[in-house]
Image (tube, rainbow, N blue to C red; front, side, top):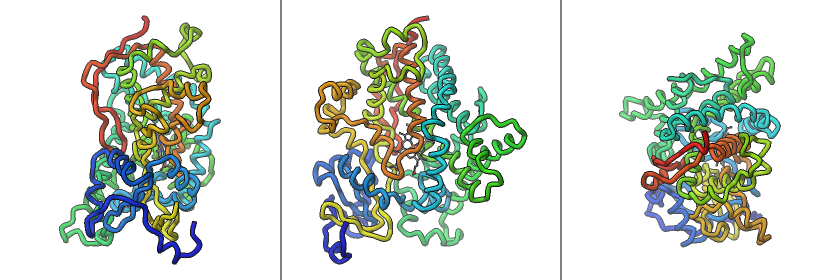
Length: 477
Ligand code: HEM
């Protein structure tokens, strides 16, 4: 980092594509699948690219080294989040653990997460995880063609049991309905550019409604639904605790840890447990996408099944968490699912703190820069993962056997779950969910081949395979 502001000011910005006068690279930012554009820029300009959109500096990191240097090692200053006037401030997502600015509240969220999602607590959920996977097995047996629906239902029933001790109703469950509603709202709010004018001219939020802007009314509607979704499930658990009927859950353990909580405590508790069904972290979205990718990978690579996987000792019974250490190929398969088509191809944007410019490799990173890690780009860097577009679980086995550079084929979870002080706190929990589903499906079902065209992945921030059909049959009766 630099010593003098004057010296800093003379430093060049990192290279990048030229933009237009005034608007800068705004149009470049509105592309679909931005990770592909960023990847190209990485080849053209290098692994650290600077662009600007309406005066806002944006830095894109395209290598593991640059990501680790800035977002991990200098995490103390690179852990803020960008301002989003509509979704964040008017609707209220700026209160959520994922979007909140760095500071005391963010630290409090992280502390709560580490209390309720530490390795010991996560382990306590394993019996439930093994039990709930039954939803998936039953669905695959009865109507295998609707596999995606079964994955959704499995994840949802697990999520709401863990988060609120809520047992899903067979039909039309009110929590599911609510989660789907806020999920739809969130997708509207984060369409790139949908409310960009407010981010550029935040004073517009103060313009009175009669001046013809409709966004205030829209914001009120979104906010009402979001507030309800944060308050209502929390209140239910609180009432159940008072009545002595609460089941063990993430929310109950937050409430029970403190007698006479203040308003501020309750605020953080509600948003902490709301993370399971609001916004990008909607567990449902990310884990359903990962499991859909697993099914697709198996359908496209039937050869994998033959060199598999579960050794003879498991043929008489269903694999459990106890078996995980003895199933190295399953471990590789899961890593490759995280890498091959990651559910979050670009990281949730970070922001360099507002007070200081930073220096990196002789470049100036202006204070307040939005910093985006192209995680997809790193996970498709042929120097790190040879033949990056192929689904090759054994790449992780080869690595340890050949004793080649330990820089090759690193665990993709390093990139899939984010960086520094913002790294995903749900990683251990969700990794268990994915493991038990994968190992159970492998033990009980043959998957493939694909019976439709190969689907494209959706172009959004959470990317999942489009619809596809494949043959799923039980291995035995
Ligand atoms: C396959 C499943 C999941 C994946 C791939 C995933 C990935 C991510 C990523 C990439 C980030 C952004 C990190 C960054 O900004 O550098 C993140 C943040 C976060 N995740 Fe997850 N996540 C998953 C599931 C979950 C679950 C189940 C929870 C529930 C507890 C969760 C809670 C969070 C929270 C609270 C944040 C915000 C952390 C912060 O900003 O401090 N995630 N996740």
